[in-house]
Length: 125
Image (cartoon, rainbow, N blue to C red; front, side, top):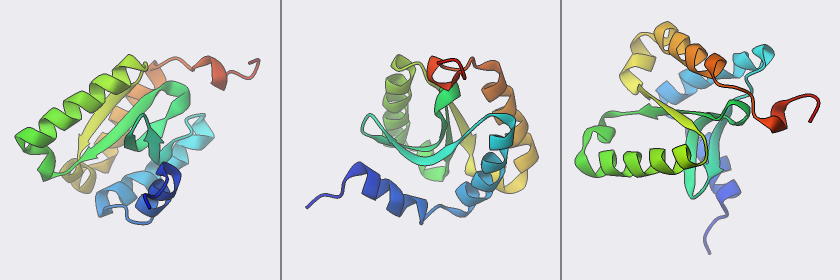
């Protein structure tokens, strides 16, 4: 029996990589600024590392395995699917999260703040 996407996401949330865990701590803090991020969110057959649905921003933490041709093709297809749904994918290197989390967070804030809220996130909706 195959686990449901929700059950699979719950398991993945328990197994974040060290860079993902480090970034998650910082992304959670953005909720107070109106940017509610989720982690390991199932979406259209994929699991998004982090996503702010109201701003349609996905943040993917890429380790070294993302440098190989098969992974590059997979990431490109995934990003195209997300783009068709109105999402922007911000890819950050795991090494950058480890060595310069402040720079990564500046980039995340830059992207999330420039993206308009979706209708579902507006208080009058």
